[in-house]
Length: 369
View 1 (cartoon, rainbow, N blue to C red):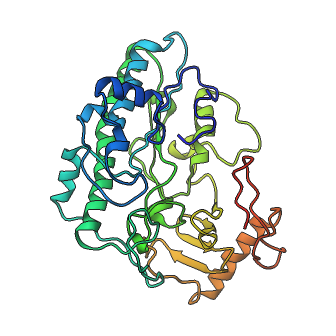
View 2: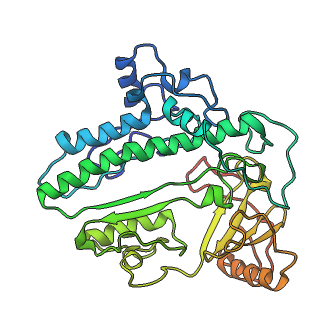
View 3: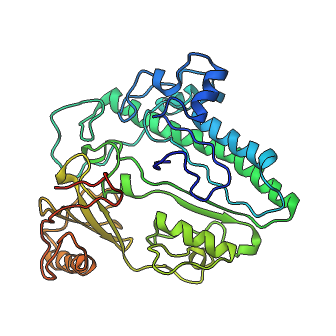
């Protein structure tokens, strides 16, 4: 998890923290005990934010994904207070680069045909191929290897989570407790779509992530249902509070998803906004709106607009902003209304404008244009 300071409890009674960036966290110390001098991620020989892939170079049980699951199972069996309700978070670093799944999972995807990236009619191919670049035009084996590495990391998490969830549900049944599992992610991976790698983009590869909910019969969840209604990470907190029968504070951006998964409504919001301040460049900053079918994107430092119909163009290959001016004007007006009270000056209430600055939410982390 990205958190500062990293060892603060944030309301948890028990925390075991591991990160690929830290040399002295709990995982690193455990790994040194299990395989002295191994070095973990730092000895893998590839970038922690790049597109190169290779198999995990140590025993499979030493992989951080396996370690996280084993720590979770150990806590369930030995470290928790069984007389109290339980809220447990497992936060995986994978499938984030470095792309180093165990060899079995990398080989599985290197041996089968893999889908090509989506390349739309709007992006310009970059001229370089730096291994840690957010924009790169990969082809051939380099592209196959990157995609196989990422898919392998996902498959590894799926298999590891199967064993954890079996343990969790089994204990819940034996103790006669209701149980709820929510699986999601903070972002996806562009993985070559439109010549992008990494995250921080409003496109489907980066922004559309799984949000899966399953629970015991007492929650009344329609098992196996799916929806295209727009939901987001902020919905997890109110969903969990709702499930626990706890009050949901006023002013939250998120909504409880229990009414949605029970079939009591077909959506919890009409439109989902998204945004990102400048990260790799000023030009990358964006604001977006989607209702699940249409997606509108505005780049505040360039003024560029994009409009996609996700029903007919799920890969976002055809920018309709210029060819459907009425629809674009509608979504632009929606964004103006959404941003009109923001202090950065994104709009005067009639037009979208280049902002003055992006103040930091956390002191020292601001990005001023």
